[in-house]
Image 1 (spheres, one colour):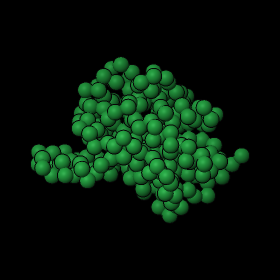
Image 2 (cartoon, one colour):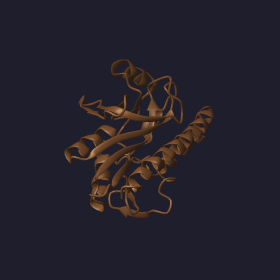
Image 3 (spheres, one colour):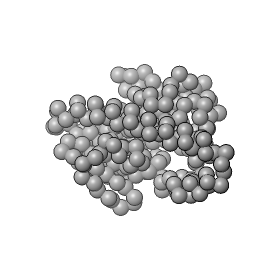
Image 4 (spheres, helix red, strand yellow):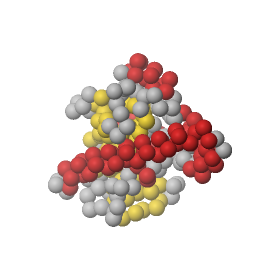
Length: 226
């Protein structure tokens, strides 16, 4: 069987540079997917429930043989910097305690149901030896395992261990989207946040560039086997 990876990200902006020229599928329930001759990318929003929808959509579009959980993540390891790429050797579900292993790598990624504060990042580092924290990888790993599919988590650091992001949580919707307009209005009225927001925008851009470069390398490997 030919290789066909499904790349699962939370938000389209995380993969926008990767999928230029791909066919776009705007699906029900605010799911956006992209396909080319040998791969599929799906985005349904933040959190476990939305990651489930994204993978289901990807599997409906292509005969998937492997699953990659990708996107931006927060650093728990102080030695990690913005733009660094994490390949998870262990993915831990913070709620259930379940662990999913990839013996090729050693870094530990913890999936949390909410955006982690600086204090929480420190706790995850101390309790689990976490390199980074995200919101979806454990769910994607569980589903990949249930379907007997190869799994790998690749995350790019967008906020280091000392960068506080918790306040963004109030702008996440019940269906895993981010209310950008509401966040912009909130920020305009609070000038003290402006330097932080500029840093966040620059950090996110750098992280997406790193993630894109890594995913292009991954896709080159799959393309040779398509």
